[in-house]
Length: 301
Ligand code: PSU
Ligand code: MN
Image 1: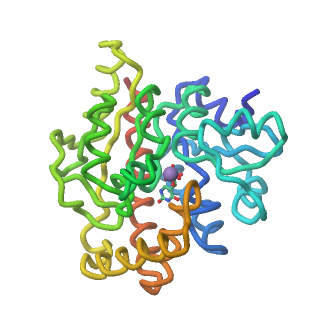
Image 2 (image 1 turned 90 degrees about the vertical axis):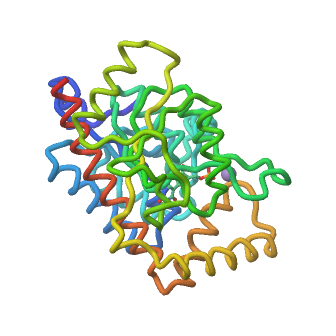
């Protein structure tokens, strides 16, 4: 059922490093036409680190691990491309739908294909106003039962960050800062919250992955929280102001469910003159490169 591209299949069979990339950020997280450029640029960044990129999406009911250029173009430009969490996968497969995969769906398909390292921008998590909406991303629950290493710039700052960190603890998902003891804030280098473990090199991350396997506890993920470089972060004062506006607009327009995250991200892009987009891209680029290096270290284990 899984369509694993020839390049990815060969890399996996010969023990070469592979990095999974999600597609929701391309289809629903970034504006056109920049999204296509970014998708291709991220794949190139993985290659520069000596790893093979495996962008994941569902096309015409077929889950793909590793896309060719034409398929990446479909994800970036096709109207009506859906946003698929892991619960949506059987529905998309059975109905022949096409959709971009979120962190939860990407992690599931990557793990099934045997890809251990995955890069994204920011994870989903507990939304502010959770007590009213019960909106918690399916990313968290899926990562609690999938053995994969996710490199991210923390969780999206549109979320309730401390509540999300607490949920990760409750769910038993390991979290480590990469070169920092502060949990990153997606557009910001520091979310204002600490992280209890710090790892300093791809080799150290690979050693933790090996320890996960040796210990053989519940199959949970390892989250490597990699901050956007300080010089490329969004100005924190601008971030605070525009985010408050975005949350108001979301409530005023009655946006709910799957549409919330894309709505907020788009609002930030439009009201920061694109500065949030640049910070988002800087974070994703850094994560993709680090994931390439971690995959290389893992391939040596
Ligand atoms: N990171 C980004 N941009 C995004 C996302 C992550 O930089 O658009 C996506 C991921 O696919 C994540 C999803 O899984 O947002 C979370 O959506 P929700 O809150 O509806 O679960
Ligand atoms: Mn949600």
